[in-house]
Image (cartoon, rainbow, N blue to C red):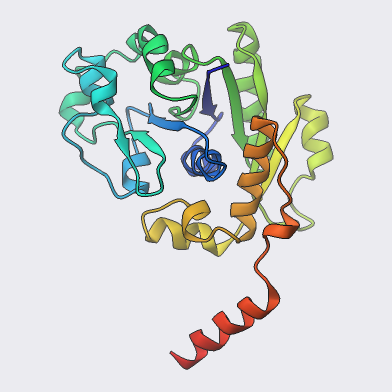
Length: 259
């Protein structure tokens, strides 16, 4: 069944957009039809992340009834489909975020799996985007302020009667300071879909204007996103078999030293 999954968070800066993009890229890795919509209308970054900061037609045009939804869809080099939003402040003032739920059925027709990047926080824009969801995924970090805000988001989702698929914990360092996954699960009472390690490859992929799943497919965060996508798609994926072989890693290291 086609579903619209909205990626949300209680606070900004937790890796929500990175997760939306890489979850879409991971679903695409498994040869599934996926669309990533940048519905973070105030501060859109999906296009920036994927080297398409400005396009002729975007989600803003759709919400202003100046274009049909299919006209705002673009295919990334990887095969993943994206619907960027405008970076223009001028256009933002003309947008009514609550209109987006009127296009729910139109969005479902565009792909088998639709991932929506939501505005951070729990303001009117974020709540309007959450209304679009068939399911929500909440992104948080393993630290108390982010966990507290994630809990607020869960309570709001429950009031809206929106089912929560689970939690994705990003920027995991596995040190003695951060909150452990069992404690997070106990505090939030929501399944943990996966944990994304703090890893330089994520920053490197951003610098390349691409998803880490595409740029560094065998890296730890890439494999972590694939594990989550496989869980959502209910298919098998062996992360260990997808690791970079030791010999290949040595060759890459030697090449780097020579250069």
